[in-house]
Image (cartoon, rainbow, N blue to C red; front, side):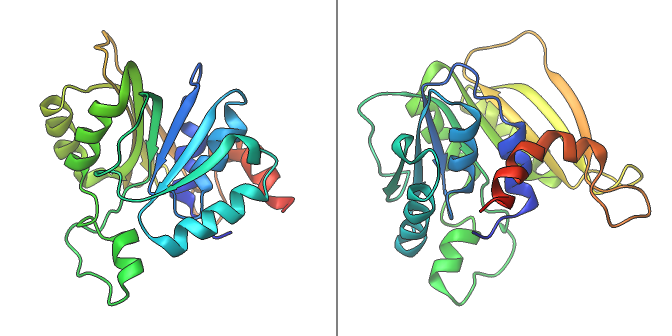
Length: 221
């Protein structure tokens, strides 16, 4: 299974406490769905994937996991899907490439280019399918921070948690971790994490502490 730092970071950071149903939008290999199933032992987790080949790979990875009985892939476009019941939590590592040229390969284009699912599309659909107390967790480029706040207000979401992700402690943030809630909250939890030790090509202690349980499982595969 191919994994990336952004996905591991988001899956480890996301709060699924109390969630009975979790939806991973754009599941790809199924990484975030697998992490959600590991983290929230009582939840049914669905991975939505628009690319058929990726959906097949995600299903294979899920079936090979210890949580296969609580994992399911839904092949299709999240914008066109209907759900019989609202979900408790939604997680997404969305495409970042809003200003880049589409890949010549169509599957990679769908998976990586935001023409397939914009942030506005995601928030609109999230507002439709989440329960009133539902939460939506995302990792985004730091440059999208202003757009995030504007779209959250437009689609009646409220920022509950907002963390900056820095490559190193001396560098500016290049990603943001965000949890949005449909229900309004009085306080916003703000934090930051840096990925690597200063001057070294090693993950920081904070990153290791946040993600160690998931790397342990992946290392055993």
